[in-house]
Image 1 (tube, rainbow, N blue to C red):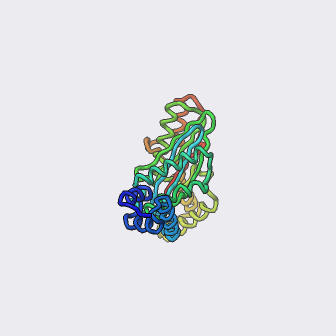
Image 2 (image 1 turned 90 degrees about the vertical axis):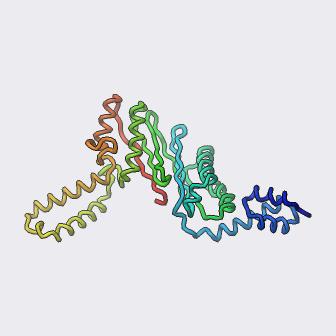
Image 3 (image 1 turned 120 degrees about the vertical axis):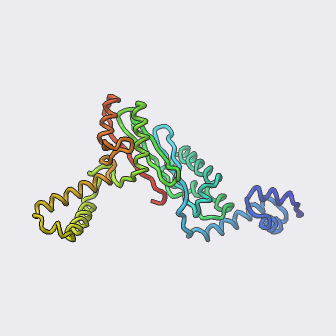
Length: 277
């Protein structure tokens, strides 16, 4: 079956393949555009499989609040050029649509299938690295934030009130988490093994300090504990100085907001998201 330049043009628009590839596909498929499109897709998927081991250190976070849930999707790719591609961004939003519509709570086969056409047309390895859903309890406030690099984000859920002041505070907490990247929510969440390891590090540093050697053991123990307390305050969200009021800790700030709202507030979720982690 003969084919025309218009057929090649239409096939290129359908598949995103190059002109020579489209011409070859139409030749192989006797001018049948549908068969040629299938041929190109199969060829492209085979090539994509070969690219599957290539590192995907770039990408984007996508978040949305719908009903009583916060939805998070992480898509990765090889280059920041693709991460900023409008088709890649559009597909990320579609991933959220499908996740919400189907009630998915993790990466499913449908997510991976949605990637196939873009993998073929862009010719770059990409993955749906994460699908996560966070519940919002009744009477709670939720917020999210994605930093301008689209690789760092945060989700915060606060129980006790849905007042506007609490909504503002929840968003500000997301900004805080993205800026200060706390490792834990509070001191009680820090594993004892981590604290023990950190004590050994500080103790080793103190042993190498000549001025410290002459101090009594009880004094050195007090200094060591002080170093631990300071370190925990730096890595625990609730003990950090609040991003919008560096005279108050996050714990002090939530107490202030609770008093203004006339409610008892507490953090249900305070989670940092970093691409690839």
